[in-house]
Length: 84
Image 1 (cartoon, rainbow, N blue to C red):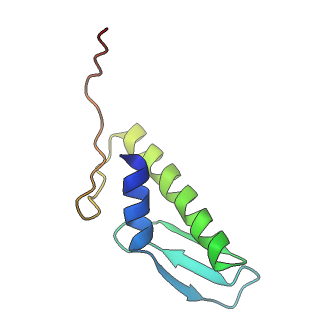
Image 2: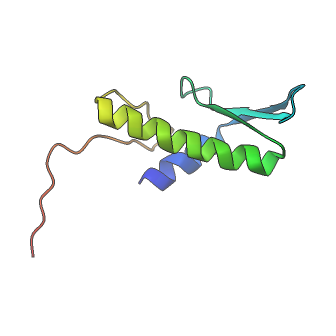
């Protein structure tokens, strides 16, 4: 579920070239504060995936809402049951 959410977020990312030693800049407009840079587009995209992952951890840990990305949602589990 989290991998699908991250991939959906990456599919909505916007990239541009900036005047910097890491000239590739990427952000996901739907996710406030989620952005990254990289020396290549591939590195920027990889870094952006890591930022999204960390952003999700912080949101979940603090009990903050996570906006859906298309059909994908990440919600805090209230109770986990294991049977067997």
